[in-house]
Length: 256
Image 1 (cartoon, rainbow, N blue to C red):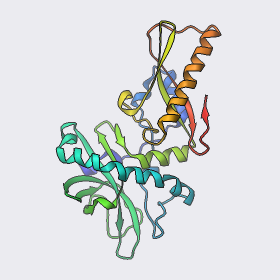
Image 2 (image 1 turned 60 degrees about the vertical axis):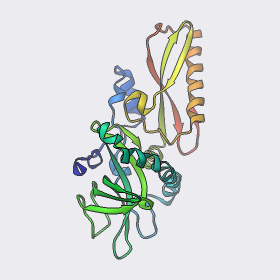
Image 3 (image 1 turned 90 degrees about the horizontal axis):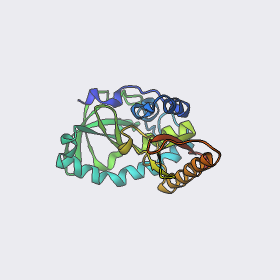
Image 4 (image 1 turned 180 degrees about the horizontal axis):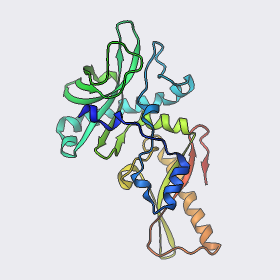
């Protein structure tokens, strides 16, 4: 199953304009695969621990998300050991540091096949960029302290976790869309943030944009809808529609 992991397939980054296109075409955005595995999975660590192909600025940006992945992994490990992911027909992949004898480091994705205490076994699922002693498909053993990122994924590519990958995509894109379901009922607008779980699609900002920002953009989206209604725009009672705000990952600016 490791070599058939969704992480071994390239996914085209659609960008905000494509999200808008999808919204305007019967809201098919929930089926979109958002980010490019080449930008987030083909990460390697050179001797100085800088992610392969990344600037020092980007490496600095994603450092907090590596720490977040480490902090949240114990709960993931507990579910893995309990067999929850097998019952849910999902798999656990992690990103770990592998090291050649000459000290060259690279961060690779591994499909987890076994866990014994703090030791794990798994299969490398992405092409190796820097290392000479490892290749895709190799079985590797590693310890929990080597884990830098984790993701739980189903057969459709729907993901939980992957904070590092999402942060890389957001940094690379500059701006990200924050999506909401809006329903007009009895003269009022109800706003619901569309996270990956509720929307059943990969939302690039899950886990990397704070709840305060999501709430603030939601308030602005609601205010925008109310203004449009005052200006004469009609909204169908009880029928959901989808809209978005924008978060600039680099500057922290939000719109509307």
